[in-house]
Amino acid sequence: MLAEDVACNPRNAYPGQVFNDESHRLNVYGSNVEVDYRGSEVTVENFIRVLTGRHDPAVPRPKRMLSDKGSNVLIYISGHGGNEFMKFQDVEELMAQDVADAIQQMHEKGRYRELLLVAETCQAATLYSKITSPNVLAMASSLKGESSYSYLTDMDVGLSLIDRFTWSTLDFFEKVDIHSRLSLAQLMQIYRYEVLDSHFHYDASHYPRLLDTVPVTDFFGSVSSIQPTPALNSTAGDSDSWSYSSNSSRAAQELYVRPPAAVVNTQQVSSSSSSSSSSSSSSSSSQDGFSDCSCSMGSSAVAAGPVQGLPSSAIRTGVYLGMAAVASMVFVASVVAAHTAAPRLS
Image 1 (cartoon, rainbow, N blue to C red):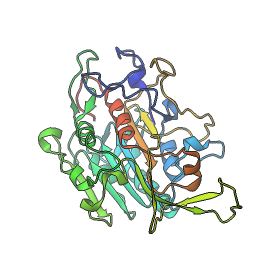
Image 2: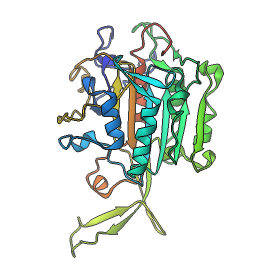
Image 3: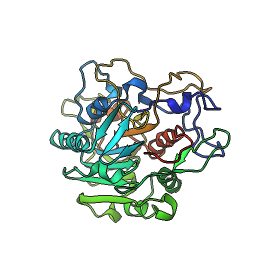
Image 4: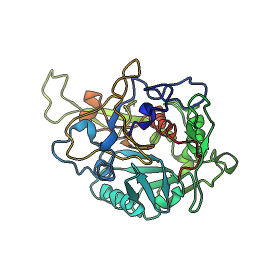
């Protein structure tokens, strides 16, 4: 979900481009970025609909999160917030109770196996204070009463390009690939007060596994062990009559799936699009980085996507709403470039 004020803001000296450091080495708003919700579509209502699956029938599949009870879901929220709320487009707020209710609905409807919520706002830890659903792990960049801060300054653009929490996260993932065994516990160890200028917090009270046994690729990226099995209605000689099961046993076939990210960016908070929208916007900028630049006010981002336990139809088509390790961080970095000279998020 992406509000697009970063790439299209008149103050951006590089129209249609967003960088995550002052070297301008990587354009994180390149032609391979897929945007599912943008501009006025980024609302609290649509964000909740993406999580719960309560869409209007006209909403196309690419704008839905097709998760199930076998999916690991990552929700990464970055933007402006406060005590138990996060701003959307500076006109509405996502409340902590809204987040808790949506995740509870996801649990009751079998829309996740495990869920990781990452919040990067001022007083971020308060955003998940109401969650009681099982198998949920939450991480935050700051405690109640603390601000989250930006990091580095690009003199060409005239503002900071990234937040300290996201910068630390991206630096960690430079060492991660699909074969990595780095754990969530190791990820959490990098968030130091000396760098963040705020206290990192996490809540594993509703999460069953030990964090040092959970690979980061269980959430940041899709690395699944999948066993192909004949479909019940298969016919002899029909090479397409195959289904896939993520419950691999014995000689399972390892398939590494790198799905495109589901991205939403709002003005000071990101969210998804109106449920009645039937148009599918799934690409950001063209090769030259200038097209598809319909701007709207906003500077935050939210992403949600299942990353494991893919449905058979998704694997067959090779199209799946999920979050790759790089892509999930990329869109968050783009959010930060919209921050003004003031370094505070709140």
